[in-house]
Image 1 (cartoon, rainbow, N blue to C red):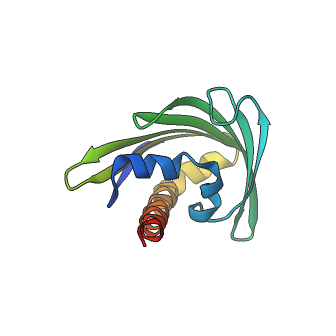
Image 2 (cartoon, one colour):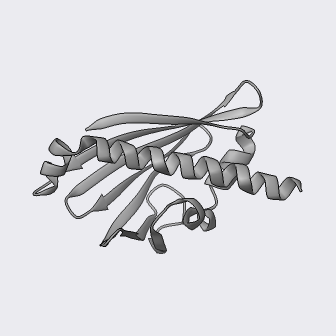
Length: 150
């Protein structure tokens, strides 16, 4: 399953990328994220691995992030592996008129075992979750920038 989501952020691209590229900010906008543990490689660079732990409702989800490409603002890509799910994510940022930034994310999900049923019967749930994260990042970034400008 593949899809793309995007959102416009009312900030210049350099500020958006600065906020996105700071791993300390992840918990501030990524709902349910409880911890990030560096496992190997140089953090944030291709080949680096981290363990991300989420509380998603009553479920606890653990996934391994592997950074593939770090060439911001053009691309930050990685894979996210959890039980029965392999997710390939490409994030990109584009400057748009009005000193705003378009945040675009391309998602590809590959399912195994019982998770294949989720992909077949609930594909909208994945896109909805992705859009929710984009909304949360937009709100976080615009609020954070407001604090800095006060």
